[in-house]
Amino acid sequence: MPRVGWRSFGRSALHLLFVLYCIEAGVFLTLLPWREGWQSLLTTFPVPSLRAVLTLPVARGAITGFGLIHLVWGAHDLRTLFRGRRREGGPEGGHAGEGTAA
Image (cartoon, rainbow, N blue to C red; front, side, top):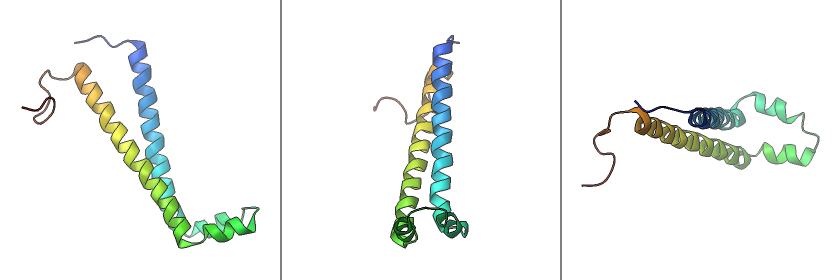
């Protein structure tokens, strides 16, 4: 079993924190614009023209799209993190379909 140093552990921990951030921000940005609390949140904005723009469905869709990008990015990095962990301490052959093409 390979020895994992502190540097590798720290890198994996930071990678995992980034994945958690992406998933949390993605869920938040995807769901929040369509919740009832969105209107009350917008009343706290000091610029009335910004409030008017953020109530438009196209702005809500853009925010939702940004959230979906975060979710995809987090899922991609989570997959990368697990693949790296499997290479470090997993079985030599890996799973079928991975590695070099035959």
